Length: 72
Image (tube, rainbow, N blue to C red; front, side, top):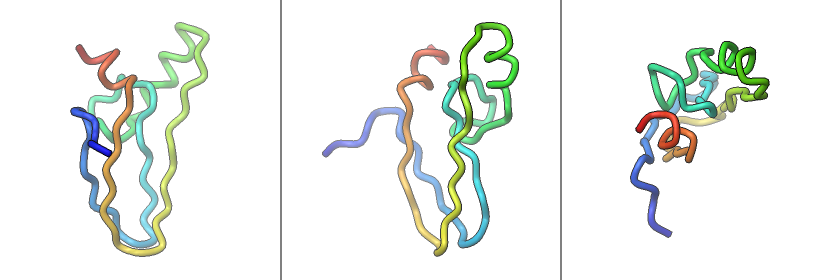
């Protein structure tokens, strides 16, 4: 499977929580900066960040179609 064009590689450290943006409005993509709160209030949406709690150091690729939709 090919990774999407907007995929971002993240280096995760064990036992360090990270939050991934799902709304596409974050100024620090792919990480959440809580802009979804204002977006939800203004538009009646229900975006929340995705929390990741790795047990071991690892690398992952993340992407979201909302990143493209809101950031064109």
